[in-house]
Length: 266
Image 1: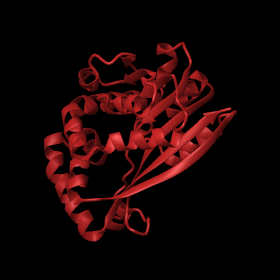
Image 2: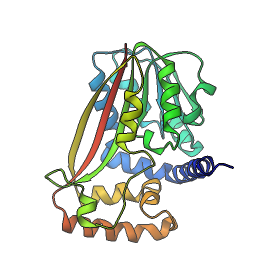
Image 3: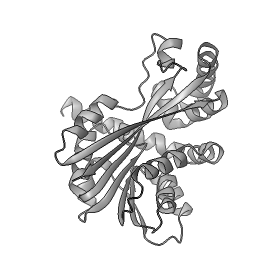
Image 4: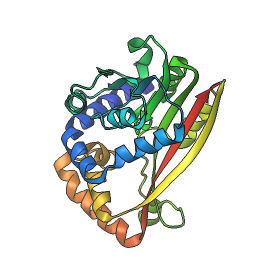
C-alpha cells in the first residue's frame, strides 16, 4: 500500500475514534462557551444577504453548526449534514429531532460525490477542513456540487496568539510543533485559488481567551490528541493542565485565532 494512502487511512480512523470519544465532552464545552455556534453564525453573517435554499454541512459534528445555519437564515433551507463519527451524529439527530428539512448522513467527507448527486447553493466546512488528509479531493468535489452563484464557506482554526499577533505556542514552547490537523492554511488557500470560476474572500477573527476556556478546549479528546497523540486520554488531562498553566504564564493576554474563507462561484 502507498505510504500516503496508508497514512490517510490511519489518520481518518484516528479522527473517527477521537470524535466518537469526544461527543459528550464536545457538547459540554459548547454549552459553556458557545464557540462553534459563534463561528458558524459569523460565517453565515459573512454570506448575508445570501439565502441558500440547499446547504451541505461537511463535518457537522453534534449538529451545532447545522442548527445554527438553519436558524441564521430567514427561510430555513434544506440541509444535508455529513460526519464520519456515528457518536457525533447520534447527538446531532437528538439535537434536531423533529426539525423538517435536515438530513444527517454518516460518511467520508473526502468522498462527497458518492453520497450527493444534486447540487447545493452553499457548502459549509464548519471547523472541519483541517481534519481531512486528502482535503483537496473533498474541496474539488464540493466545488462541483455548488451551483452558479453559490458559495463555499470555511472556518479554519488558526492557532493561539499574543497581543501582537505572534504565535503564542512558539513563544512559550520553542521546540513544540503545534498545528491542529494535517492541512496548513497556505495549502488550503492554494487549493481554493486554483479553482476556476470562484471569487474568494478571507477574514480574520481573533478573541481573547481565559485559561479556563483554553483548558476546556484542549481537553476535548480530539483536541488533546493533536498535542499528545501517543498518550491515552486520561493521561493527557494533567499534561493539558500543565501546558495551559505554562502558556498563560508566558503569554498574557492570550488570543485564539480563526480564519473564514468565503468563495463564491461565478
